[in-house]
Structures are given as structure tokens and as C-alpha cells.
Length: 336
Image 1 (cartoon, rainbow, N blue to C red):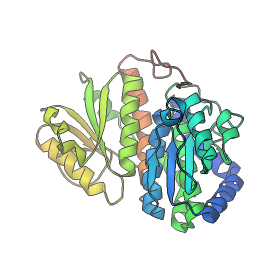
Image 2 (tube, helix red, strand yellow; image 1 turned 120 degrees about the vertical axis):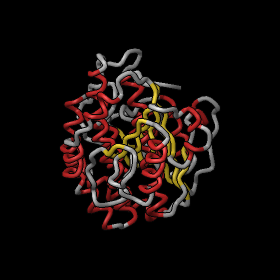
Image 3 (cartoon, rainbow, N blue to C red; image 1 turned 30 degrees about the vertical axis):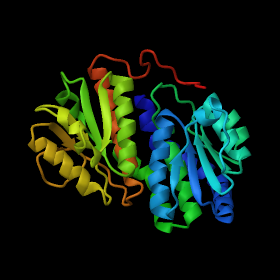
Image 4 (cartoon, helix red, strand yellow; image 1 turned 180 degrees about the horizontal axis):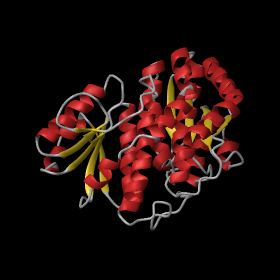
């Protein structure tokens, strides 16, 4: 897992070079089709990547984005009315039956289907109008890291081409350097701070909330910690009741319009006795963690998860676990 985390900057750079032609062709088709809605199809970490792209597309293009439950096709056998839709399906293996089934249904129902996968010769690729190959190489660790990060880069690169947003495009192409800085961020203080704790909250907002979802999953997968992710706005609607003195909270604040919201909540909870850490320089009671800024609000949250990955791998080993082979999990999950 650690080796694959360190590969992320180079994998992203290679992807941006290798997939440029497919990204341009897919973006040209999306501009021509001019969809009125975008749909996403994924599970697990890939679904967190889709949640990130939901915010990015809505903020950049003003198009609504909805996640479709794969069981609509795979279990319930229903096709949807998607003739004015674009669909993005993400699967590292490209062969989970429910993802492939929903992707096939979406295309059959008229959607322009973009498949994002690390396996170009896969059923998902066969079902797609355009297949965006991550070119990430073999990922051996059960916990996805380089494929997750590159899936988001793939969606953002497509979005930059589709929208013609030159600032976003420049930020995406600068990501290899930004993510190298993110890998180097030292969160070791948080490793020992979590000694004796087996539950915590991860807070984010906007694209940062999608990153909080991914972080919470990785706490569960690699560290056996019952982590729950919440929007910094949502945590006050009930979940705050269990934040007793010493309860750990990780606030993943990016350099975007939601930074103040996430920071203020982390500081508020720290003021009430929580053991709160925060990726922001906004002053307050929570302890600051270092971060690598990317210079663009849409790409900034991605750097946070790369820094987090290095930390959570170290935390797993600190707790006497092996993050590469979590118990009861396997690399390819094929659900129906």
C-alpha cells in the first residue's frame, strides 16, 4: 500500500499523457450531445470518486448529477429514461456484475456512457461509448489508493475538456507536482493521538465530503476503526450527541468556499473537548495538520486524501495490522 501511495504522482502524470486522446474525444461528444443530467454508477471507493465528481460537475457546468443504485438493473431489472443523460461508470476491475449491468442498461436507455477503469479489456469497457483507461498498473493492495486518486483525475480531466475551463485544466495538469507534495505531508502526530480510540468522525463539505467518505472507509478497511463521515453541516443534526470529551474528529478542509464551515465546526467540537485535527490554517482550538494546496478549489480536496493515505497506512502498522491484506476483504468485489 505504501509503495502504491508513493506511485500516485507518477501514475497521474502517466495517465494524463496516455489518455489525452480519449479524453478529448469523449469531451467533444459530450459537448455535442449536451446532456441535461449526469448519472454515476459505482460502489465503494469508486462511488466516493463519483461523489467528488458530482460536486465538480455541478460547480463547473451547473448540471445536476445523480447516483444510480446498480440494483435498479441488476436486481430489479428496470431500465430508466436516459435519452438526455450522460453516465459515468467507475470500476477498477471493470467486471463487477451489478456495475456492468447498470452501465449496459444506461447505454441501452440512451445515455452516453463513459467508463473509467484500470482494466481496459473488461466488460465495463465493452459496455461503454468511451473507455478511459487509468493506466495505473497493477494495484496489489486490497485498499485502493492510486486507482482512486487517478479515477478522480480522470473525471476532472474530462470535465476540464468538456467545459473548456482552462484554469481547471491547468490545475489538473499540475497535479503530479501537487500530489508529490501531498505524499510528503507528515501526519505522524495523529498516529499516536489515536492510541486507544476505535471510533471517530471525519468531516468535510462539498468535494471534501466525498474525500471524508473515502477516509472513513480506509479507517475501517485498514485499521478496524469505526469511522463515520459527515458533512460539517450535517454533524450537528444528531451525530454530535456522541462527541464526548476526547472523541476524535478529523476535519478535512480544502481551500475552497467550504473551508470556513469545516474549520469552524472542527474548532467548535475541539472547544467542547473533542480531540480534533484539521487541515486548515484558520485559527482555533483544533490541532492543525499540514496540507499541500493545489491552487484550485476543485482539485484541492484530492491532495488531502493522498496525505491521508500515507497516514492511515502508518496508523495500521502502528496498531499491529497489515494494511495490504485486511481480513475478510479481497481486491475484486463482484456483487450482483
